[in-house]
Amino acid sequence: MEPLFAILVGLFFTAAVYLMLSKFSIRIMLGIAILGNAVNLLLFTSGRLTREVPPIIPDGLDALPSGSANPLPQALILTAIVISFSLLAFLLVLTYRAYQDIGTDNTDEMRVAEPDQPTSPPVGY
Image (cartoon, rainbow, N blue to C red; front, top):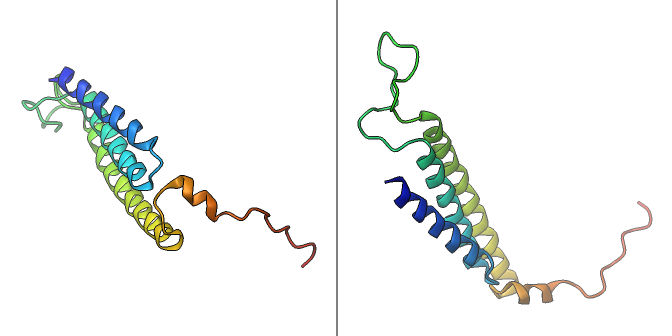
């Protein structure tokens, strides 16, 4: 099962890098979302994929039995899901506001909105 997940993680990373190299901000956002999912799947796979033994310490033992799943990557993934969702929501709002103000989704055309001659900072206050 791990080789299948390794191939899937590689496909996710490939798709994420391809989308993040685009010049459209919506595609960049989708690439960031896919990159977050690829990292989560990589962490999940590194914590061993077992169904038989849950990551619970039974009574009378001080540590997990051998062959059980590692609970630390699962906790990291839950935290990463919350953080990536909030980052995606922030990027969505930022992209929408940029589209409203500038009128384009293309990052090359967004550079036109920058002034040619920047104003100098104030000399005194």
